[in-house]
Length: 501
Image (cartoon, rainbow, N blue to C red):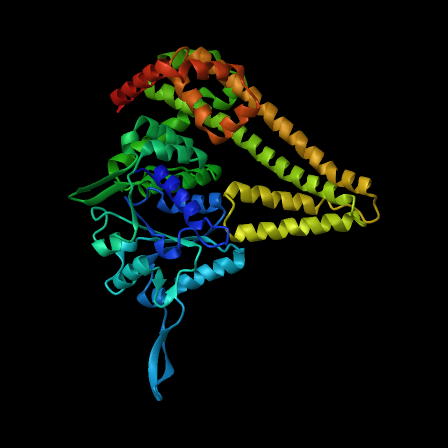
């Protein structure tokens, strides 16, 4: 199965394992809750989906790469106690609590999340001394004499032997006690994640042209050469930061992340070309409705890779508008929810300023707990930190009436609403200008399919279009993305890609 299917199945498992009956007991007893064992190529996103699942299910996550551990840290250190049996004293070996088990209790204490996922990576690559401990862990859900707390679901991951010489096979007894899922690398699935994670558009554009370069593992006389999803994502983070700092992304830099010489050389050359297209075509000018006449003449003569790259650049430029609008909307919605709660409590409040401060304190404490539980994405975290700062600066003055206090608290919120309206308007205008260009440059072409598909599957763009309908998007979506016309255009696009590669 692919990583997306695995994520959905694990989410279903979480819901089933944590379901309780009327008496509060788990419907599936802990002894019958089989650990999940994921076996798949390295770097395809196993750890990332654990973070996503925990966040979406609002449960805790404790993650360990087991190869970093010794037997003592996993099991605990031995110590001697004295016991008496039949009147005779005996020295008995006990063990301190495992570092891994104690991390679960620490997470429960700090986040107040009583349920979660214990994720153990590289479980089939442990040392000789730790191997029996891992088998015991999967079979009995214990480390040494300490059991994994109830409500914590075990997910383990490992690599197939062709990717790692240290891999150990599991015996039938162990496999009969786990839920075994075999994973495979899949670019189409990763692309959905990559768009949501805002992977650098140059990388996505390159992989649209060279999907066969997404995941490669090859052995030759020079050793192992490989490219993984993790490599592309980590390279994306660096490229964005380098560009902000005006540092060139050289061929040598790219090869530090893509450990396949041919792919690294090809990708580095394409990235340079991609940025050249951005400057040559004036993408920001296009989205501002200021298109130079010679641009249409050039795009008409352009080869397939250039036309598709320009389309992706338009999509990337538009996405910045949608991302900004989504950020302003989330901030506005969070602030509105706070003010709504504040207004509902004002009628019973003797001191409106104290009521506001108390509500703000509750908001802050909830934020800190949920932050400790890793329940926020990076964007959600930034928006909530921003809101707390704004709320802290909007505390009503002492002695104000409830009406005056609410009006004081609402003044900065009204300014935020204006920022949201401006962001929405800017996105609408840029979208219309993008359609103007696409219609002129690619009338009836496959590029329009790519453009409309990008709008459809993008998280921020699809959310924006659901609230701000665009007549041309609706029309092209119906014409191009439904039925045989869509299949015909996608087939033509695939043929062009094959010819180019």
